[in-house]
Image (spheres, rainbow, N blue to C red):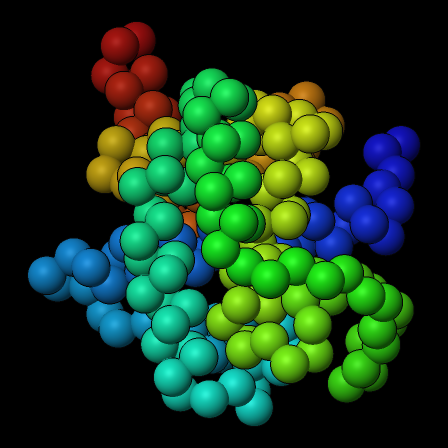
Length: 188
């Protein structure tokens, strides 16, 4: 049985939030894409302070993550050294002052920024620190790109055997499996 600590779970949840945000913002950048409700997405991913964050802070998260999309989208297969250098450069721009806190019904957890930091600095620090820990533990091996022919979404694979092939959109796996099945039937 695969057991994770609370710390591992928090890292996983934070990276999954980042991956969902990257995919949603990438889709929104498409001329036919729909706008992203960053506040709701973050709130759904347990960023409890997103609900009360200023519109400016939410806009800055969208802008900052949008600027990171090329690097984050390149995580599958990326070499650790340039990724480490990139994360370190990003972290250098944020005032990091770790402290333990429990608020808004959440269990005790680490805030990487002081309580006076803007919500966008807090969220970006959480994302970067989760990525930093993931790189220390697993490199970039858990990141992948959806195997569906018409999808380039990023995914984070926490399966025991690293077998994930598709993003979170169930249509990608379904379309691909259906096409593979039809191809096998035609071949027989």
